[in-house]
Figure (cartoon, rainbow, N blue to C red):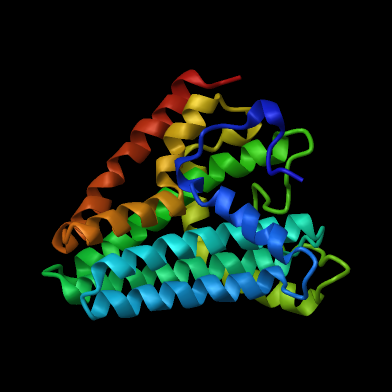
Length: 257
């Protein structure tokens, strides 16, 4: 099952790892490997990237950041090919993402001339950027005929677990997820409270938004590391947030049906 119906698909700059993710998922389809195993592997890949950063192996750090993005996509793909949707995997994936993002930014702070306060601001900016992208993307997925609705537009209460998972595990992970992401969800909702009423968004708008997807954010970091632009990474992501206002303004002013 695709995340979107054919008419709603768009060029997603943050999803460059999807073709490789599909290959991995198809290779693992008939094995005992589960989507959660891939989620754990992308966490390991992220930690290896941190190790490489701290030891000034910047090119390898970028490689493992990109590998992390591919594995991040592969866990969802494996869930789809095995037909084992899981809220446990969905929330575990998101919890690992935000924790790793924080570690990435703090590691970059440590090896650069950036202050902790600026690194913290950059982390908040990256999370806000990602939430903007996810907000509109989840609206599109939920409204797309036959689209993937595992992620909800409004995450307010723990969902009912699928038959293949524990309700207790879902409840615990949902509580952690809400504590980490809830504030960003509320901020974006307040910025565009009417967006959920829109049935679809044009592909060009979603493509523009995709530069705020986590995969593309990590690609930017990987490229900047490869070119030894470590001191510019944190300031870049702070300034990069300016375009959030521009994109939300486009939606509110021009995309109203």
